[in-house]
Amino acid sequence: MLQKTSHYMRQANLIGGEWVQADSGATIDVINPATTLKIGVVPKSGKAETRRAIEAAETAFHVWKKTSALERSKLLRKLHDAIMDNQDALAELLTMEQGKSLAEAKGEVGSSAAYVLWFAEEARRTYGDVVPSPWADRRILVTKEPVGVIAAITPWNFPSSMLSRKIAPALAAGCTAVVKPASQTPYSGLAWGALCEEAGFPKGAVNILTGSAGEIGDEMCSNPLVKKLTFTGSTEIGKMLMAKCASTVKKVSMELGGNAPFIVFDDADLDRAVEGAITAKYRNSGQTCVCTNRFFAQAGIYDRFVERLAAASNKLKVGPGLEEGTQQGPLIDDKAVEKVEEFVKDAESKGGKVVTGGKRHALGGSFFEPTVISDATPDMMFMKEEIFGPVAPVFRFDTEEEAVKLANDTEFGLASYFYTSNLGRAVRVMEGLKYGMVGVNEGLITTPEAPFGGVKESGLGREGGHQGIEDYLDTKYVCMGGLGL
Ligand code: ADP
Image (tube, rainbow, N blue to C red; front, side):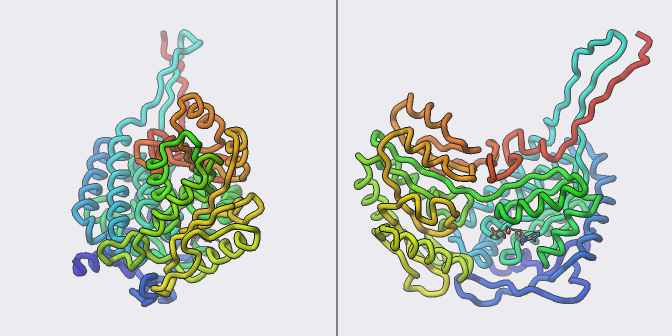
């Protein structure tokens, strides 16, 4: 498999169909978080390379926008097949640079392919309208057109699928793209270049840059040829990018931070709730923006839930992602571990009790034990901040109103989950949660068919669903007169 994996491990950038190095020749090391050993390097590109990539995308746009929806759909299907034919190799590459278990990496690559297939289908459904006209002699048409060149910046936690949700709808809509994967996990991003070449997309349709986030990001935000910026990452950087995009009034889509609540009511099916809790907390070792940040358990079920959650957390097999049977890989780097340690220390100093885990794993490096903390209170750090690690704090509550109020007491509004067997409560709570996504008796809800995205400071726009292509389209109103009617 390694031979195939190395085919996708590109240590170069893709600009206008050419695999190139940075102008300066500078590179960035890429580290395997499970071993802390260097895997390879990628170019450290900056402003000049970004400008060339944008110009290449603009040239390609004039050709690509003229293709038919059916043509684009067929190429996207080829891209889907190329991903699935190489799922194992791409998953191995992902695990090597990101750390997650091979099983999760395969799942992520499968999800990337699923988004591509979805948008291959949606490419053919970007319908406009013919609107009844108030004038007898004029006709009103509303059409959809691709916005043009789009720029995308993605994080390290889902280095393959975060790009899929941006590249696929862009190409489906008739846009071309310049993308920057995160420096920690660039190979899964660069692999999109090789895959797009294999599928037969024209040169310049997808350009991929690695390097200085500031320089690449600044050029993307200020270059007038870029018509839209789509970003997944922290709220802090997202706000900065939005401000920069204001100077050229670009469309923006932002998938930012979350602070997901997971509420377990007394009437919940406990087995189901614990199973959902494990998935919603520990996927990617807690490093996802939809991972549960705060568990709220009702007083009558609190002790049983904590006990069962701790037992299930304790059973998770921690290890290098490439090792058979691993369920929890390492965290991305030591800084991430230090941050998690800070959360645990803060909780303990305020009366929280570590029920299981709580410290670095015996494997060393950036491995951390799956951790459950009981007696969590709102003055603890994880009430407000994203943990991004395998720590599950459990808060106690008495009434439904209190649970919804606590859950909503955050500036974030991405994913939320709750467990109940009462139908009336399900509807009340579902409507009461100020979140872009709600899982009712479900802990894993992401799928290409549904619109993924947040409200409040968790972002703008949706990825997936029929909504996912809208952000890549402009609406044009055409009034046809002089028809001699
Ligand atoms: P995370 O902590 O999830 O990596 P960040 O928001 O720091 O979240 O990073 C997400 C992506 O944004 C990464 O690709 C990173 O390189 C990029 N990024 C970070 N700083 C900037 C910046 N100043 N301009 C543009 N992109 C940036």
